[in-house]
Image (cartoon, rainbow, N blue to C red):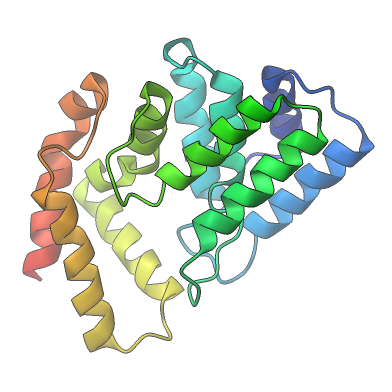
Length: 206
């Protein structure tokens, strides 16, 4: 079941924000964005998977509310023709959090968590590390689900010529393979590191 407004209000309460009409309108806006028709992987299903994993890991986060709030925003703006989606998501989340009365320092941490999902560098905080592991968990899925994910990503970039898409995709996947580790947390390393590397190697080969 995909998340709805009730799940959004749960995140708000976890963050210490009392839901009101403005917050509910923001949640409806977020849900509508995640339902956009051009999304094949970065959809409500992806958000739901991330939130479910985060809920299971709440005891391990220093600031679970900030992490879940960041997850709601991390791909809320998703335009495959743009390269600044995460930056725009992070800026929006920070401003939205401040408008909701969240402490500016916490709003900045939310902003930084979202920027960590650019996967340009290894995360620097424990919360960011686990959030990024959650976001990348699809890489360690079973082979059939990983192959479906690859197809979904291609569908989102249907407008890119095949030769260019394959070139850029291979470059990205090789960057993950070249890292000393794909996952930062012990649990995700134990469960997903080996299958992720197998999936990536198979994808690069084809």
